[in-house]
Length: 224
Image 1: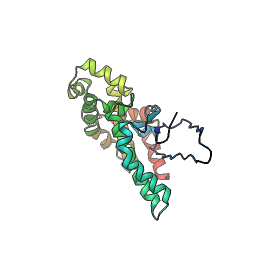
Image 2: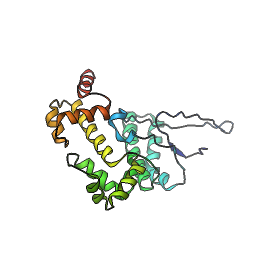
Image 3: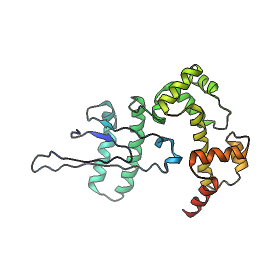
Image 4: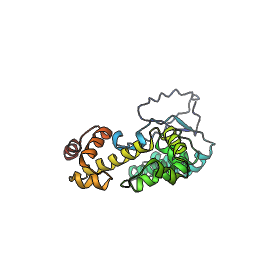
C-alpha cells in the first residue's frame, strides 16, 4: 500500500489500479511519469521485466530524490510558460538519478542494471560496451572482473539473465541495428568493426538477436 509521499517504479506491461482511501473533502493526486525506452530488441534495459520497486517516502532513495521531486511537482502544478519542456527535462534527470540509486542500493535483482550494480560484473560489462570489437572470451572478461572463469560465468548469468558471450553478441547486434537505422549500409565493414570475421556470421547473429534482417531494419528506418 502506497502512502502520501511514496513512489513506485512500475515496469511496462503491468496495470496500475488505484484505490483511494481519502478523507472526505481532501483530494488525492497521483503524479505519473511515463518513459519510452524504444524498441525492446534494441535496448538491453528491457531484456528483463523489472520488478515492482517501491520507494518509501522516508527511504534514503526518496530523500536523495526529494529536490527533483519538489521541482517536478511545482512545475507540473503551476502550468507556467514552457513548463512542459521543464517537466520533461526534470523527469529525465529524475530517471537517471533514480536508476543510479537503484544500482547503488542493489534494488534491481535481475538484468543489465543488476549486473551494473555489482562492481565486478560492471567492469566486464563496461569493457564490452566500450570495446565491442574485441575478441572477448569468458576468460578475458573474467579477468576484467577479477574473478575465476567459472565463478564469473555463473554469477553473470544469474545476475544479468544471459551468459557473457550471449550478452556480447546481443550488444554488438544492437549497436549494428542502430548504425543501420542511421544509414550505415556496408555490412562487410560493419561486421568487421564489430568483431566478426565474416559477413555471413554477422547476418545470422543479427537475425537471431534483432528478429529481423539488416535490410528489414533499413527499410523500416526509411519509412519513419
